[in-house]
Amino acid sequence: MSAKAKVLIILGSVTLIALGVTVYVFAENFFKGKFPEQTTVVENTDVSDKTVDEALASMNAAEGLHMTVTKDDVAYTVDISNSVKRQFDSEQVSEAKSDISFFSYLFHTKVSKAVTPKSVEINVKDLTETIERALPDSKYSTTDAYFDSDWNLIGEVQGDDIDFDKFMERVKSDIAKGAEMEYNAADFYHHPKVKASDENMQKTLKKVKKYKSMTVTIDMTCGHKEVLTSENICSQLVMKKGKLKFKKDWDEKYIKELANRYDTYGKKRKFKSTKDGNILVPPGNIGWQINQSESLDRLQKALKKMKSSKMKMAYINKGAAFGKNNDIGDTYVEVSINRQHVWVYKKGKMVLETDCVTGVPNKERMTHPGVYKIYAKQKDRWLGTMAVQGYHTHVDYFMPFHGGEGLHDAPWRAAFGGRIFVSNGSHGCVNLPPAKVAKIYDLVSVGTPVVVYDTQNTIVASTEEKKKTEKPKTEQKKKTDDNKKKKTDEKPKKNND
Image (cartoon, rainbow, N blue to C red; front, side, top):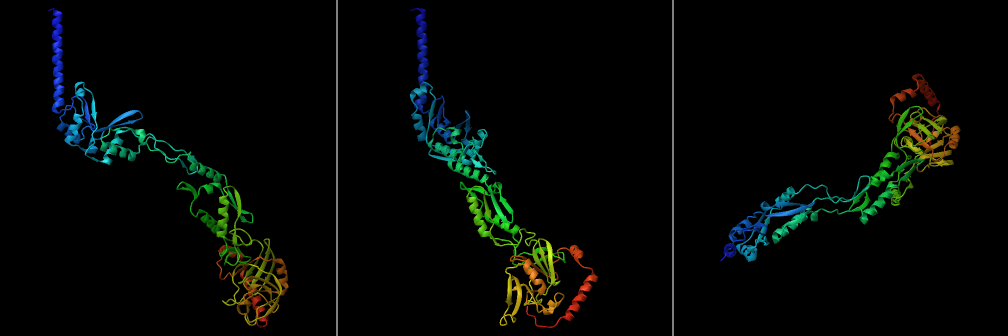
């Protein structure tokens, strides 16, 4: 036999022996209950070269339990063994081992087996925090499309923030089923619920554009206007349940605000008197009073048009001039109870003045202070009845301004002014000398304001102004003496009105 043949025989023998040993080793593992010594994973636990009991202990201890999460093309391995408790039994592990073929043992094939646990207990909070720590922070948060404070439409943003509620549901399900835990983070990102392209958002945008281009001009009267700008209008818009609406009751509050600003009806007024400076006069039947219900209805109709429009403010009552500081104007009749005097002004200029006699200063017969307006002009008029008022008196001119109180001639009186009214005053009317009444009748109109005041019962607005307008004491004394003389000249007679 040649040397070469001997060498071949020896090499063949060695190979057979080695193969036999290898087969024996794997056969021993295969038949004696050990898992292959190469990489063998059962339900995410490495059980290489372990017996069934050893593998069972490792699996129940969740040794090496992990998941793989890929985000932005980077795979992150996350150890979750401390957050999960699983329970397997030996029968399950034995079945897993028996499913491994002899050739897997022999040829070192990588083995991975899935087994459904008998029970699973997951600390979801701890598991979530573990995964969050293992993954990189989000670069962008997902946001819905929305309208900013200026009602500009801001588009949605698709972020890379994970919806962990959704992710945990999937992970819990996979752990319970014993499924492989490999995930793509993008599958679990939050997604915008509202997009700029949504039909509702586009409809809303069209409405917003209309509101942004409109104004409502409110004719307050007498050339005065209030403008509800587009900024004012848009500032009252809100989105509720996906619908564009106005804030509740804002329009009603707006009308009330205008009423608070412009209403003068029923309020005291600052009035510059002829002799007593600035005084506060009690309210009467004149003054501006917005009809809030009707005005609100007009405003709402104007807003529904969604384009620039005009509306007139509705009023329950009106003044002679427009303005919170002066609704009387510069044409009026001024009656001073304290001075028993009347002044008539036309366009700011005094055109007539005269003494008068007002009502007896008691509850039944007083002339009531306040700001009124003449509501009728009558000639050849009989006042009162004997049955009701206790008098029946004829006058040539009558200009009523408050109930039965009015300006009229009193031909039965021989004197006017002074202190006559205290004991021999009218029943509330302003008695005037016959020679003056016709002129006053021609100077006034229906609607002309009548300002009645008593400085003894009216707050003087400015002490300094009062001092400036007060007559010197010598003049006051002369006036008092003249009044005393007039009183002695009066003939006592029954007061009619």
